[in-house]
Length: 237
Ligand code: ADP
Ligand code: UDP
Image (cartoon, rainbow, N blue to C red):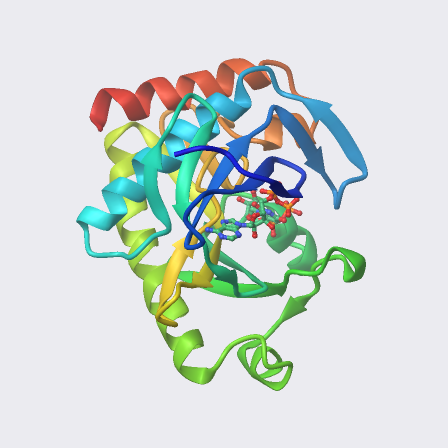
């Protein structure tokens, strides 16, 4: 599989065409951004870790019956995925209060919820990814009612699977962001990535942050944290 024209360069990945119109190659970069692109930096080796972690987790989810865009890992940073039409929603699942939830509702981080929450942001950089509900998403024709039902069902299933998986690694899955897309036959699949860039992962014993919050909050040991979660994942998968 050869890389064709570059179709897009995002904040964390580049996307290339391939010989097959239904397949793309995504290429993971070490670039890191936060606060809607206001903070820029590099996390050495992040692209390699995010590529391999996302692929391993998507492969794991496929085995559990969740459809994903993952096709084949080509190299440390490059992966073949099914081309999808991205549903412009950031789907956020939370098990524990943190980040924007704690800020918005004026609560401390670390409150364990009785059951997980789901929220959507409208994926639109110019608007700053505003929070949106199901009805708004349907009014804006971002997705059909059936697609929203599928997305919610998959998102909670993914949470159940990943929470249990990370627990076995001594890691608590606090919250995470998912993106879904439509494949050629119109069905919904999990797309984009699952990595320490898109999940909050805390050491189950110490509560130490093992994710992008170390970069967002200028904590030391960003690279070490990414390596540590990857090491724990590879022991189990
Ligand atoms: P951003 O666009 O937020 O800067 P990235 O740097 O991660 O993010 O860029 C990757 C882009 O590719 C994202 O816009 C994402 O929605 C999109 N994408 C992810 N998976 C697929 C896929 N399977 N098909 C088409 N687009 C995808
Ligand atoms: N997240 C993400 N991309 C975004 C926004 C959030 O991957 O554009 C992830 C983030 O890493 C965290 C979860 O979604 O795991 C919830 O993020 P939150 O809403 O708390 O936002 P933040 O703290 O990033 O402002």
